[in-house]
Image 1 (cartoon, rainbow, N blue to C red):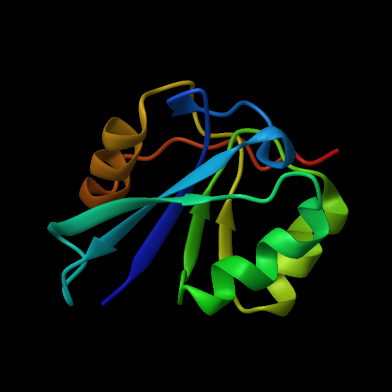
Image 2: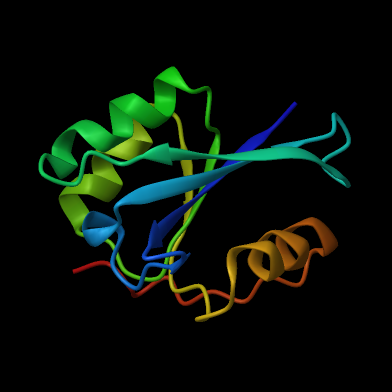
Length: 112
């Protein structure tokens, strides 16, 4: 089972990873073609450097984000979490659906 996380701010996809106040975590089927469940987790955005470890502890394997600081992106990589940056400003369910269908559009230059 693959777990995908999307940073959330005030109920919507966060523009900046580090400013999120929650993560919506999706559990995908073994074939990564169906969302089995989803749940919210607090992000701990007062200490963004701790977020990668927290996601790793939740067995998250993929993060879909709009913008992210390069240092946090490196930490995600250190925890073997794949990162898709530059995702569009869609609602989380739409982003995951695009990911599942292989239509997720990204811009890999969204690290700062």
